[in-house]
Image: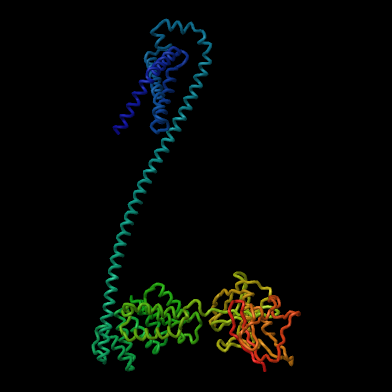
Length: 602
């Protein structure tokens, strides 16, 4: 505040030094003129009023910082000076009751001058007009003053609103601070609870180990415990009563064990089996539903969801695994949902799901990771043995390169016949050329598939001989109606023709050569080799030995009509009577060679 006062004082002094002299002179001159003209009207009062209003407006503008103080200060000094001098003159006039002015009363020459100025009376009308305009100006100034006052009120209201908003903001800041403090306290509490939970988990693991050891000792001793106190004693009694056929006491013992909320899987799976035998699946679901509402052990919740039916059970099991991804026993139980024992017959998808779940379960065996879930270690050993046996039977079902459809193209003079071979029974097959567009169903045959009990899908479809190299997509529905695929299989017409011809030549090699066929003595026919020449690069032969010193020149392959023999080509040649055998070797277009084949002449 002291700095502001010092600055204002400095600014005032500087303005007075620059403006004070001329402002005072002009103001004094204005006062003198108004006094002289007083007979015509109270000009001193008008000047004083106008100057005072102007000074007030300038002062308000400076306070509200509507104008720069350095620029407005000279005007303020001038207006203040004029108001003071004119007001003083008007005050003296009223005090002395001087109609012609103070100066005229003191100086007779001025009074004579007023009387001798005839132009004064001539310009009275103009002066009266000026006075009228001055009054209008005064009214406008008053209106401006009112406007400034309104703006001042608005500014004051805005400042009050800002003050209220500032108070509200302060409250919000305090609320945020309190919320932050609460969150920080909550985080600390969560950390403490997490540490407590970790300690509890370790205690539970240790307690399960203790319970397992106690159960093993009791099992070795045999007989029921007369007054059981510990979880292992109740579990032991439940097994003893169950094996003895006393299901009522077995049930009571299992319920007492469940009251300890021990997170072990085998007691609850055995209890659930007992309940299903006695009360059915609905009864077992009801009992475990009651236990699951009160229990914290995941094992109880897991066994509870196993009491639901089929698809609902699998959905709940998947949801449990999503929420407890490291709960190892859940993977063994998931594998059972896809097993042959559960389903009767498995699709490839079922086998893969079973193998994936069993592999995941066994992976927890390392470093004794499964022991903490079992009170009866013999139950764990049984689960592990069943898992390994089943994985061995499933083989390499998880190999993505295995168990995919194959496509066998066969070329005829009319076009291509495409035969599909699937790795499992299907209820529908469809195909598509390229990587886009709709699939075409192959349709159904008139015979039933004994494996599915449904009409067998047609395993083949036709393509024109003009079909270019492309990908053929194959997909099918398995016996459960689940879509498998699509699988993209590359089709190259040239390569397919060569491979198909090569397969036929290798399979029916005994028909390559025919001596004296059809009674044509002295002729050697090689019609079959000629018909499937699209797979052949070269044919070498020899007579009466295996020297292979001769060659059969083959006509070029005609891809549009591959099996036709040109009209100007003879599929035979002559031999003498002393020729008793012929050796032949074919070099295929893929660079491989057939064995040397020998043919005896009869």
